[in-house]
Image (cartoon, rainbow, N blue to C red):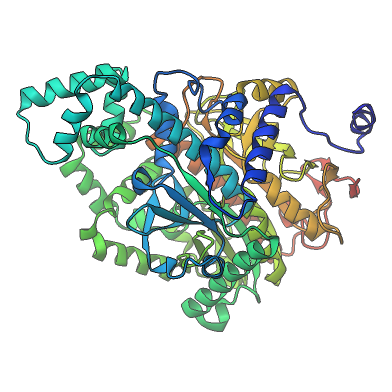
Length: 621
């Protein structure tokens, strides 16, 4: 340890934040990784003690007999509803993996989804859930989440069964017995008292379980939850096959959209990892074209939003009118009766050179291919109307925008893209993060990133600074020159570990930056990414930018995305960050078309001075 500390102090190795809290997290991870090596089913409860010892910051009341509604809500939103009926969970990367294990026909099972996670999951209609894991990060995400769900389910089970006659009364309701208003209120009062839930907690369950709290509690009272897991595959080559299949689908779909001229392997690419709505809204002009219809929709059916719009129009509040229309457009297009409206949006976007590619394979990451030469300058968001945009008609470049992946899948995706693209001109990443020193809605920009997956500490010249985001951010603050940690997962953090991180100068907890930078390393140097090293990426072959906006403040106990959602407030940092990325791409492409050797053209032929900061030579080691 002394030798490692000496090396770290001299910039030779990165040991990462170390301490007892980190040890408990590592112990839990070792426990489930060794347990899941078994070729048979493993009972999840075998991990309960090591999970509790970790003291997850997302499950602060795990040891309490009182239910932790924040943890239950967080887990439930990221699992399919059929998990309530599930006993066995199968984890595998591909159909072939399931077939070889004797589970043929899995892909004929019913596909199920979770509101808070994009992951291919299939249910047999009885007790088995098959989960397609795209990377090792899926295991790190699922195991603690399932444990949290099981622990909180069994707390409720115990409390309900301790109340005489209550399980039988709930079972009768679940079987279809009709209760008048008075008897239903009395049963609710009994159930609420038995489960020790406050009125606010009960209301949260009404939303979580779509109004069916009593039938759901009847199921919980009937049986304890005991998940059994089985991992059917896990070899590195299986994950590589998944990402290779994903790229083939992206390329094939792009060719179907635009023919050989839209081949992403023959045109320069700007790679963006964000979401599937904000960048398209800024570039397509759909909301502006449909403004009258959108406002009429709000006026007729959403008085709260109409009041918000009038306040924006009268400048009583500083919110962005464009951001408001983007938010309304999402609501306007929802529902099965909106098929014609969605088709119209697709036509407008295709006319602007924007094509959507829906993932139909194991890596559940949707994408968009955007042709810069077909963008209409007059329809761009007004905040993007730069001088000389008409020159974009001469551009051969594409933007490949993907719905941001989970954890290590980021490495696999970027390796697939960079391994096939003719030329990468930039890698830009926007994502959610937890902040240790800010507030929900703040924007963080880091140039020092520690990756828990590889143990590497990356020093990079993040192409974004506070001044790139501040003009578009109304409510939050922009914090640049931050230190970030790419963590294994949301549950794999504890209050003690966060204290350790904060004491070491780390203020941002996110999931993808480290794996992305491991992939950038392999585009910069002739070797595979190292481990436990300090890596200087100032000489990356293209510019790299990371922007994260705060969706969690974990020092506020219980206040996570399970207890509090961004909703409309999340529009402000999302669009401020997306505007910074979009402007950066447009500025750089215009500079290249004008033959300028400027900051915007960095990456086309070597790095140089960047806004007064001189890039140093490459080093890794």
